[in-house]
Image (cartoon, rainbow, N blue to C red; front, side, top):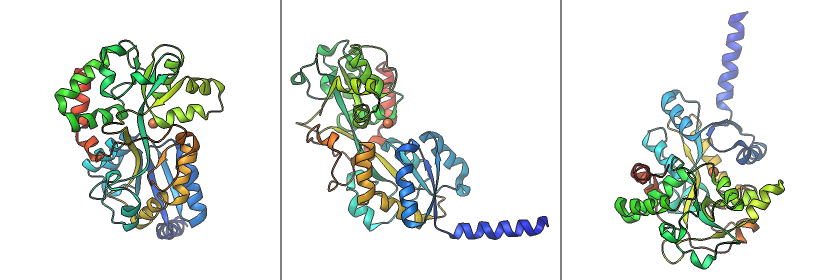
Length: 335
Ligand code: FE
């Protein structure tokens, strides 16, 4: 009897493998990705299995599992992590004319190892009551002594800060960027603590006047059902930095097919769906991220912050210079 059951199980497994499915390792908060995957499953009949975890932990898991990994697709935020995954040898390149047509060249890996699905900018937010936006200009200016004791920013262990600093290293070199970091640290209102939302609430609480945050965090506070969140969001305004030079720093959420993918075609089809109209609108409206496609509108809230010039640096530079960025922030005393 046991042998019969085993045989039935084997047949069942074989037929499951043949059915269209995609197994995802995702570092996105589940509520920021699962709803659109559920829509995809309903529309296509493709089974999507989602494992959620920390980005670095999932990349390490892919390394350890090697060819036996059940994952087909890695979803994560920040190009620094997608770059790490490519370097770790856990991804494979994808040839998709559709992805190449829809995702601008600076928002995908030149060899097809990863593609952006949505964009976010790391912007300056400021206290509407106490800061005159005419005093703001560039990221570089945040190192000016006029901001002494007025700046809040999260830890340098955070990849968003690392990627922003890496873009500066790419443009200005280590020495100049380190000098900037020293000036920035000298202007900190407090030792780095909390995430981007907490920098905004610190401004609302009067602990600092200026902070660096990703756009969707502010959008999330402003559209929160919690009045205290909304009040924190209302205390600040967005300033788009570097508008007369490189443009505001941009990062991505993205997707990559794993090296061990057993459902590569289905994984690529899902990636193609995620840059399609329905998913791009969903990203814009639900997540308050910028669509990766410039022909898809942003949410009304993001549009209300005005047009801005986005930095068009090739994003792999943020991965290439990550280690230098981490070391110089450490030397500069950015905790
Ligand atoms: Fe985030």
